Length: 165
Image 1 (cartoon, rainbow, N blue to C red):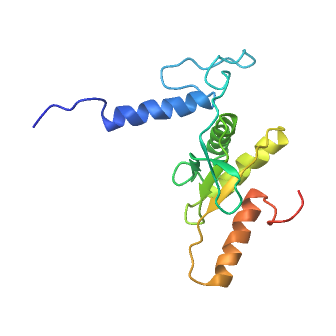
Image 2 (image 1 turned 60 degrees about the vertical axis):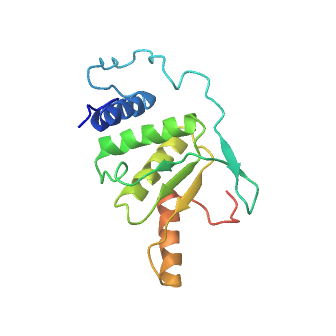
């Protein structure tokens, strides 16, 4: 057996997690927490953001970033207020870097209400961003599918297509 080259999966995931926490402005393990009222640390969000790579949606031609935000597991935090607020910071960082596409499903536990919490929090703070939602429908019954879509829309306070906002 040859020795492993490069980082282990655990080290790679830890580095990526620390990067997400840094993007959200949260302290990482071993990093000193910022004192209340202290000036923000310079970081990736404070730097000019690169233009995301986009592709057109075939039906409309609207340009959409090719990288989106998945919500399975990470956003399934239940009613834990601190975890919900941390997820809102991840969404804030995602939008700050030009993200628009959020993928979710009713099968992802509390992910949809948690994303709804994040979107509402950002909107209250004047930081709402253009959002493109990719939803999965988990039923074979057309009527039940429409009900699932409406429930998802309600979680995110998203208007029906064609409705004025």
